[in-house]
Image 1 (cartoon, rainbow, N blue to C red):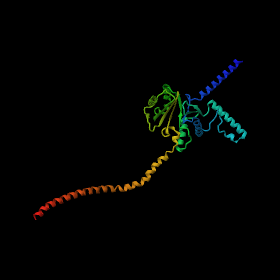
Image 2: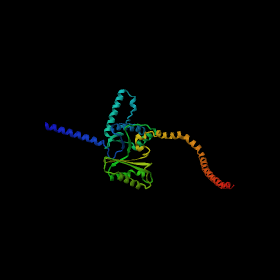
Image 3: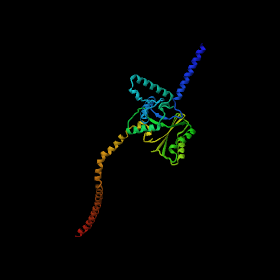
Image 4: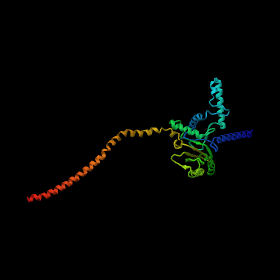
Length: 329
């Protein structure tokens, strides 16, 4: 009996440990995924919640409501007109569908373990992450409305590969072709960052990427002030995340907090100060024509003492010459 009980316990422990291991592997950032890297500041759980709300809000505008495996929409407008019992049944059915799709990894957005602190990876399916992130930043830049408190940067991930020099060079040579291969040409810069990885050095990666872009088209030029395209390379452990984006400088390196800041307010203050002092320049302009006259007058006055001095000297000489004449008289 004791041996049978021990075997059951061992079997349960082994089964439970295997199940937890499978769940952990399926929730990590892996090669072949697309998504969005989101950086935060010491609050990853709240960052994930804000990311879900923000991404779903704009994804519904661009792509419509999320659809599940059976083809029903998450909105389910038909259920709104049914009775309460039917609505509750429909709600339960929708919840079960969401749980099943989450368990299978079929949701439009699904949080993954990135492998680095203060970094959240949201896996995306059936959409373009670069297009979605650019649309969010474009609207925040135009409206100047803050829609997040914890999220700092949103970086799209359009491709992933192993973070080894040979694998990166092989993958990026084909990944960069649509953006830089002749006859296409553009100015570019490279934004590289490595987290929990020692496989690559920043200078080596940048030189390799620059050589690849140069081979695709020698007319591609580096521009660090206002480039047309930015190659983002984020390495986390053994996974390399890559994307090519536009307006990287305009959107403050894709920082949601910086983009939402109202740049017009501080820039208007220095403009009002010259306006207040704009009344003084006309006075200066009125006095300007008088300045050359004063300079001429000063020169004349400066010349007068010389003439007076010379005149006095002649008078003294005439007086000295005149004195002996008086003595003779």
